Length: 300
Length: 272
Image 1 (tube, rainbow over the protein chains, first blue to last red):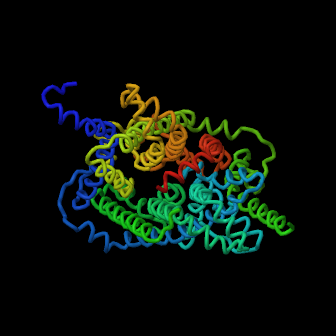
Image 2 (image 1 turned 180 degrees about the horizontal axis):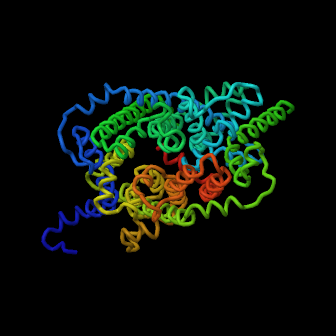
Image 3 (image 1 turned 90 degrees about the vertical axis):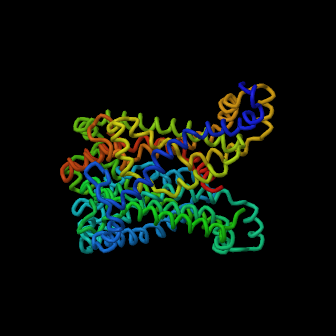
C-alpha cells in the first residue's frame, strides 16, 4: 500500500516479489545444503585438507591424478560398474515381470500387489540385517539349501568372488518394491481401448506386450531405469552392514569409498575428488536419459 | 472359455510363488524373532511357541524406545517440512506468473542432478559449525526442500481450474488465504502421497544419521539396528530379528495402507 510515489513499478513487480517469497524457503535450503556444498566439494577436490576439512595446500589436479592411478580407486570404480551391471537390468526385468502379473484383473490381486511392494517399506538397514542372516555360512538359508541339494557350500559374504554378487542379490530384492510400484502405476495408465482393438484382431499376449505394453510403458521404464542407475551408484547402507567394503576391497563401492576416505581416513581432498567423479557420472546418466527420452519415448 | 481358466490358474500360480519368494525374507525374519538360539541352529521355519522373550530382550539391550521416538520425530519433521516448503514452491510455479520463473524452475530441475552423497562432506561441516550435530534440526532441515516433491504437487496444482483463482480474488481472498483455504484442501491426495513418501524415505535414511549422531540422544532406529547387529553378531539372532521387526512395522503398515495411493501418486509425479 506504499504505492504513492511509483505505483507502476511497485504494483507490477508484486507478482515477482510474492512469487519469490513463496520460493524463498526452497531456494535458501537448496543454496545452503546443495549448491554451496557441491561447489565446496569441487573446490576441496583441488586441495589437501586439515582434520577439520579446511583447505590447506592447493595441489591442482593431483588428487585426481592420484585417484586415477590408484589401484584401490580403480578397483572401487570397477566394483561399482559391475554392481550396476548386476543389479539394474535384472532388477528392472524382475519388477516388470511382477508388475505385469499384478496388473491382471483377478480376485485378490490387491494382496499380491501389497506383497510385491512390501520391500519398499523395509529400510536398507533392516533388509541388510535380514540378508546377513540369510547369507550366514552355517545357519543361513542359502547354505542350508545348498547342503540339502548336496552342492558345495558358498562363503557368500566372505569370499571375494561372491561378496559383490551377494550384495547385488540383496540389493535387487530391496529395490523391487519401489520399481514394481512405479511400473504398476505406469501399466495402469495405459489406455484399455488399445488392448480391446488388438484383441479383436486376435493378437496374442506376447504380441500385445511387445507392440502395445512396452512402447506405452516406455516413459515409465526410462524413469525407473534412470532412478535405478542413480540408486545403484549411491549404494551405501548394505555395504556398511554386510561387508564393510571387504573382503579384499571387492565391495568397496564408490559412496562407501568416499565415506571411508573422508570420515575414517580424514582425507577430505581425495574424498571430494571422488565425490566430484560420482557427480559427473550421475550428471552424464541424467543427461543421457533426457536426450533419449526426447528422441525415443512414446508419450500417450 | 477353458483357455482362460487355464490362464487364470497359471497366473495365480506364478503370483503365489513369486510373491511368496519376495516376502519370504521378511516372513522368515518374523519367525526367527520368536526363536531361541538352539531352535535357530536346528534350521526350523516355525518357532515352537510365539513368546515375546526376544522382544523384551531387544528393548533391554538398546534404548529402542528412545530410537523409535527419535525416528518418529525426525520423519514427522521432514514430512511436515517438505509439505510446507514444496507446496509453497509449487504454488508459486503454478499460480504466480513472474519474470524469471522459468529460470528458477530450471534451478529446481538441476538439483535433481546433484547426488546427495556428493555434497555430504561440506554438509557435515556446515552442521558441525552450526553446532547441530546430535540435534533434530540437523537431522531433518537439510531435507525440507525437494525438487521431486515440488514437481509432484505442481502437477496436481496445474489441474485446478484457473477460474477458482479469479473467483477467490473477486471474493477478496488474499493470495495466502487462497493457497491455504482452497488449494491445499483440494490437493489432499497429492499431499498425502508426498507426505507418506517423505515419512518413509526419512524413516529409512541411513548414511546421514550415521554421520551426524554420535550418541543416543537423537539416534534413529536404523543406526540402532547397526549397533544391535554389531553387538549381537553370531550370538543371538532371535533378538536381532526382533529388533528388525520392531523397526519395519511402522513403515510396512504405512505402505500397506497407502500402497494404492503411493503407486498412483508417484507414477504421476514421476512422469510429467
